[in-house]
Amino acid sequence: MVNSIKPKTAANSGLVNCRVCHQLAPITTTHCQRCSTALSSRVKNSVQISLSLLVTSILLYIPANIYPIMSTELLGKTTESTIIGGIILFLEHGSYFIAVVILIASVIVPIAKMFALAWLCYCATRADDIKQYELTKLYRVTEFIGKWSMVDVFVVSILVALIQLGEIMSIKVGFAATAFAAVVIMTMISAHQFDTRILWDKVD
Image (cartoon, rainbow, N blue to C red; front, side, top):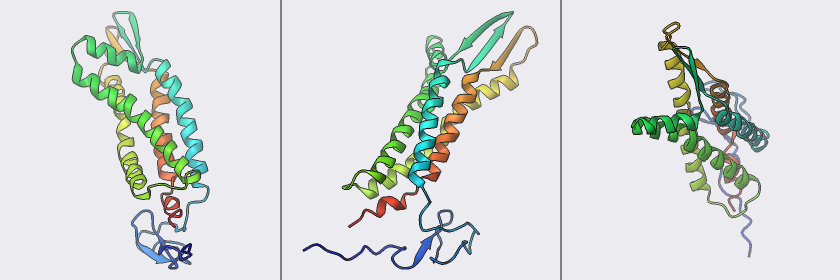
């Protein structure tokens, strides 16, 4: 016999949860009494918005790796470096720690976050037999580590600000830095727009 009893959730109990401070309030309440955030039982078109932002970040990630992230001018000679080229350059000079940090922050983390967001969107719309608890933990980890992808952009910004020696040496930001920053921002917004509560709507 199929169990027709609905799961005990906040929505079924006539309550809504604030996504900022996690305060419970009656479902008819429009704003959180604690932090004044607008309340809703579900984020409208959450998966569609997250997926569109994710696709945009994937498209931006291509020029972020193809074009130079910075150009160095030393004694009239200009050298351009891509993200991967910079990692290889640090490895050749024996700076293994910096190379590993840039590799993790600029390559592994963004790609892993894109795959994680894509998997979350798929599970929220297609899959029936899903593990809500594990997916929720995956979402929290993805949202937490996403901001650390900006390490590469921060390094370039600091170098541009500090190394300006007139005609002797100067560093300029390349187009890839802007594209990569846009990738990080898009994935952060995509993760923020994903409503994990829709995963728990599939609980029997």
